[in-house]
Length: 301
Ligand SMILES: [Zn+2]
Image (tube, rainbow, N blue to C red; front, side, top):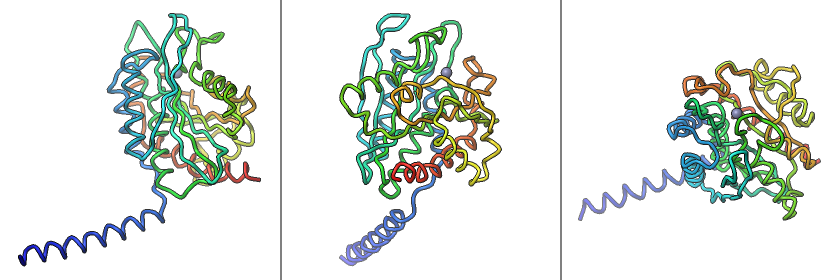
């Protein structure tokens, strides 16, 4: 009996401590944890090549949805069929939503497919394991923080990569489908800004300003990087990139692409886990988190 009483008192004390810890956690926003982001990169690489339409691509989607569920999201798939140089291919984007004070939304995005290659094994640690890993960790952190002013959407694109040469409409299948579907349903109107991440894990992190991206959005991200002391990784050199942000820009959505194309193993068998640096993932996660309030403030003006 006495043992039971002591046990009950012990349990009561434990409960009090847990409540205290939960209250503290609610006040202090969670920090971006590059160890978690890196784990997501490793798990994707372990699935092997993940081109659109492959069983490993399906398993990648399952991993993304499972990880989002562990962070408290009910992610949904947006399935579609794309006409490609290799015929009709079934693809699916993944969407997770964090409701904000307003229904108008900011989308944070990454593609999760890897480029199909016949002649070598391409596991795409940096392209696109890195950005997908960062996006999953951003989803976790932002949900643990205060309710955002605008709704945040975490958007994972399938089918960014081309079969063979990047030309005509042989690329960005997922982002083009998302924009087309959003225009048809009217949901694209509530999309106020897109922050796209692609190849963000290179040890020698060097972002250059994409001239296709929206200047004010790029300015905010670059300023956030300088504020955090990461300015040396965000260069002012201009260059033009075609990526998943182009369909959004064409639809009038302000967009910025954070992409480091200065990466020797790009689209080679050498794009392996050892090329990805947790420190780079941390820098990108921190910069996006620092830029988000500024982006929201600008949109609320
Ligand atoms: Zn690529």
